[in-house]
Image (cartoon, rainbow, N blue to C red; front, side):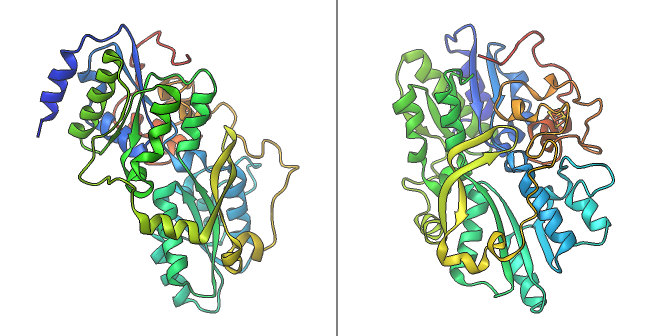
Length: 371
Ligand code: SF4
């Protein structure tokens, strides 16, 4: 197997175009790229662009608001993945602006790491409704589906905010200004849904693509593959994570998803509605749907409902239109200890990754990502 330095040498030996933009759509990929310092090791003409790879960043503001209100006003225990607790919503300062703030006001909100923990909490408190705020991409939503299929306690309800990754990339490609020349496809998502899900990038849009794992070697192998495809004018979806990503993906996980959920148009925070990009519980699991069982706290009169906080450019960061450090609040008003937007909260958010990885200055002055 080639080492990272072997792959770097191969990439440096390629007759690269003046500028080539390669997007990744996975927070784990962005973290590996940043922490390994790959941007600085690669030739200057290669731009690695973080794209829509953070489920916390794109979770609709109104869903987080709903979770906060349910926790505050219903006699429930609300469990959520740890990252979600600090994501701010747009409400007046006197009100709870995050799940963490609601917890400080007395709501019973508990961080969890997996849906199994939610079932455990529900079984430990059989007389109290427990709401699992299930926000995430395919990799997080599939375990929730598995839990439902296996059977959950009657007092467990799901506030589902699941999203599919590929429709966001399709939206960028269909926009006419995708802002990238090649794609590194997400290894975890491909493990579940199958690498074939990304064939459309190659077949319909003539954009080179390769599925990557999370080591520097795998990421560089995928990058090398896409660059060679570009240079040689060939196109194919390359699987550079074959030890984990198998043709067809994880059929059982897909079966669980099909058994419990439908796919619908869905809102992405700051981005808007993307066709066929959301999971919703199907009729069979209606009895466990928190949106059916509880009063809705949706308030269309709220100012800036659904939007990013004022001044936050998270939506542009998520879509790869700007680098995190091109947001004027980056590192000034917005830092991990006092985040303004969701991209600085989540471990998968590009702003937080860049800040934590010491990427606090513009990488290439004067470069604007907009196509
Ligand atoms: S630096 Fe903060 S305010 Fe700016 S885009 Fe990132 S999260 Fe939003």
